[in-house]
Amino acid sequence: MEAKSNGIKWIEEIPDDWEVKRLGFFFTFGKGLGITKEDLQDEGIPCVNYGEIHSKYGFEVDPAKNVLRCVDRKYLKTGRESLLKYGDFIFADTSEDIEGSGNFTYLNSNEKTFAGYHTIIVRVKEELNHRYIAYLFDSITFRTQIRSKVWGIKVYSITKQILKNTKMILPPLAEQKTIAAFLDSQCTKIDNIIAKLEQQIEILKQYKTSLITETVTKGLNETAPKKDSGIDWIGEIPAHWGVKRIKFLLKTVLQYGANETGIPFDNENPRYIRITDITSDGRLKDDEVLSLEWKIAKSYILKDKDILFARSGATVGKTFFYKNKYGVSAFAGYLIKASINKDMNYPKFVYYYTLSSTYETWKSFIFTQATIPNIGADKYNDCPIICPPHKEQKSIADFLDGKCKEISNLISKKQQSIDTMKSYKKSLIYEYVTGKKRVKGHP
Image (cartoon, rainbow, N blue to C red; front, side):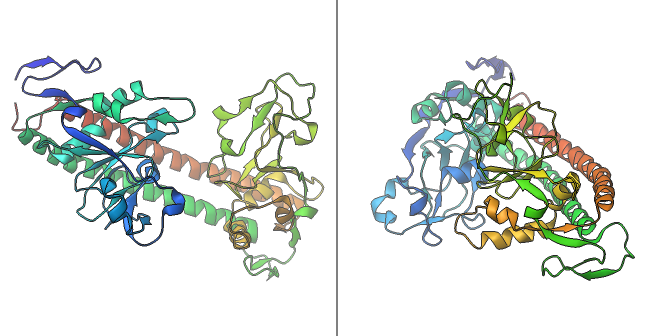
C-alpha cells in the first residue's frame, strides 16, 4: 500500500487509504455541569470531574468499576445536556502543566453518568470505533497538537475550538477495529507488567518502613532486655532507652516561614524552600528550590542536619532532612524548622524515627483532632520520640543509611523498568495509530 502526505508536520506519511480530518467534522461538543466540589456527594448519579481525568481514570472510566463522587438526581432534569452516553469522551478543560493538556477519559459504560466541572464533552456523530479513537487521543500524535495550541501561565486552558481544529488520523472502520483489538491485547500485557513492578515497589516501600520502625524502636541488639515504653503505639523498647517529648530534644522555630516581606540579610544568593518543593514521600524537589533576589530573616535560615516538618497541605506531617548542598537556604509556606539539640540526639536518628510507622500512628491520632489536617509547632513539640544513648543513635542511623540505600536502589531500578515499559507503550500506540506499522492482515 502506498503512503501519502497527511498535513500534520511531525508525521511524514500515512497509508494511502487513511484520512486526516479535523475533530469538528466527526464530533459534537458540549460541557460538563456548572458545579463545584461542594455539590458532590456520596450517593446519586456518578459524575466525572477534571480531577478524576487528571489523576485517576485517564483513558476510560466505568462507574461500576471506578469510584466516582455523585451529584443529586435533580440534575437529570436541570442538567441533561451534561448527561453522558456510552463512548463519550470527556476532556479536562484546564491543566496545571503542559503535559496534562489533552488529558481525557471515555465512558465505557451505559450507566447514567454526568460530566462535571471543568470538562468538555466530545461525542461521536459519525460511525467510528470508540476504542481506536481513545488510543488515537492517547497518542503523542494527538497530544502534541493540543500542547502546541493551549494557552496559559500557571494553568493551561483547553477550549472546544482547540479540540475542533485538532487533526485526527482515520483508517477505514474495519482497520480501526483491528488496531483497537491489537492495542488492547498488547497494552494489557504491558499494563500487567507495570502493575507487577508497581506492586513490587510497594512491597519494598513497606519493607523499608518496617525495617526503619523495627530498628528505631528495638535497636540492633535483638537480645537486649525490654521494658514497656508507656505509650500504646510504641510498645516495648530496650530497657536502657527512654522516651521524651520532641520539645526536649529539638529547638523548633514556631514561625510558619518567611515570605516576600522577610527581613533582608547579607547573603548573595539565598534559596527558598516551600511546602510545594517537598514531594509526598518527603523528598526535596532539587530543581524547584528557587533562587531569590530578595533576602530572608536570619531566624528562618536552615543549617546542615536541620529537619523540616510540613505543617499543612498535601504533605502534612512529612519531614525533610536538610543537607547543606544548596548553600544558604530558608524555609517557608507552612513548614516548621527543627534544629537538633546535639547534646542529646543524633540528627539522622531523629529523622529516621519520623519515617517509622510509629510516627505515622502518632500523626493519625493528631489528625483525628481536627477537620483539616494541620500539625502546628505546639503539636510537634508534644510528639514522643524514643531516645537510645547517643552512640546507639549513630549506629542505628549508619545501619539504616546502608540498608535504605540498598532498598532505594532496588526501587529505582524497578521504576526505571516501569518508565521503559510506559515509553514502549506510547511508542507502540503511536506506530499503529499513524500507520507506521500495520496489524497483520492489512496491507
